[in-house]
Length: 213
Image 1 (cartoon, rainbow, N blue to C red):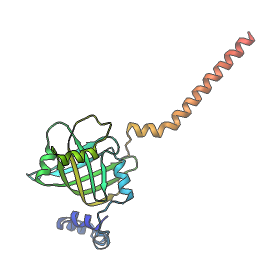
Image 2: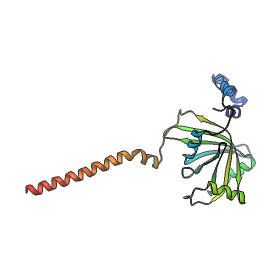
Image 3: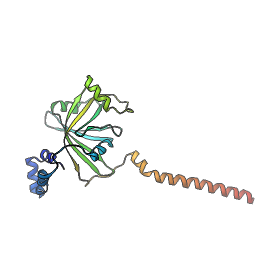
Image 4: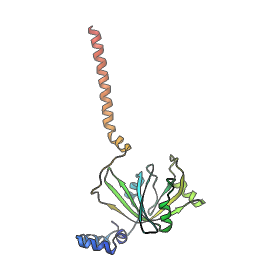
């Protein structure tokens, strides 16, 4: 955990709860000795580029949190530099709740999940929307996924304030169809080889039976 993530997340009320439940001393050390930078390293960059979806929370004008899922082909969430990520925001149900929230308050919290490996990366940042001008088009040229057919309405560029790798506890492993196909490929090949061998043996038995008759 970075020092800055602790500074942002551990409010006075949070610290009181940590004190009450006996974990304050542990996290106090993080605040004093943790890494002060919010720069993505190779592990974070690779993890981000491999995701095919993430959860993004924003805050409404009435103070209510709102969580939205964003998905796409692997790599649709781009790493622009060590402190910046972005994605092409595709046309959806046209409620525009996140868009409206971000124009009121640009703070976001992202949850990036790897269910098979039971890993998650939390990111806090400030989101900037680019829509309907040359700057937006320039960003969209970088952020579009070539095979994506849905219209991209805007570019969302997030400046990272802090991030933290969360513990694996209580994450239930889940697998996409692609991940299952990859994991089961050796068994599929083994089954195919057995099927071919079975067919070959049947032909041998058929030929032997014909010769005997």
